Length: 115
Image (cartoon, helix red, strand yellow):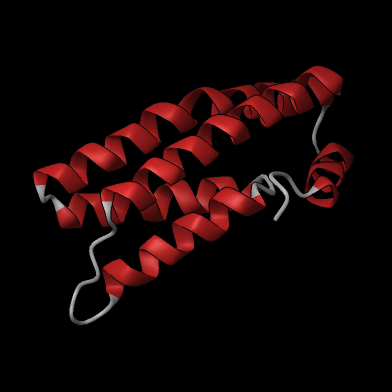
């Protein structure tokens, strides 16, 4: 699965001024890694409600910017957190999400630089 859906980025370029879009892409890029690390910390702390809110917010943000691979990973975790009984993501899965978040953040920075 690709990191960024270029058609979503093109759609954003069509409706947003270049400097606004670049600013948004850079902000999302800066927030991705700390937010994904916070999600891991919440799981380690057993703070499921907070973790679910963090994952939901993060999923919404990245899906709005066409971050396909990260969106798919987060949606999978989110579905598990809504399941009965609760399906807690393993640390291995969360570490993979952090890794994809790092790759996605770099791709967003590149996209912001190329606008």
